[in-house]
Length: 153
Image (cartoon, rainbow, N blue to C red; front, side):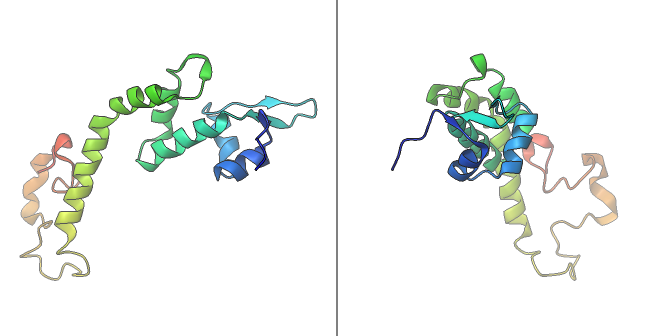
């Protein structure tokens, strides 16, 4: 296997990272990654962009928005690629949000088990049924499915 060059074309980055060309351009427009331009105006990415893309994709996979990712990457000096210690520091700031998402998913899983496929034909026994709008005081949305940190019941 040959060593990757220091600067990669958009095709090489797409092939190696699994991120489509269109997403690479989108990430660049949003300031998540950066490229240099050749005399012919073609993009060239530093090889380290592969680690940065892995960071972005991992953060997205756990449910973080690109805005969250952008804000995290903006804390790194000179727009560099996150190191292991950077990842540790940045991921710590996301613990509360991730815990809330996990709580919401667990509530959804546990409370929808009896509903899947029922078509709500038995509202008397439906956990989610809000008889006479009793939960209006809990705020908008479905309070029985919200994470506890957001006022879920």
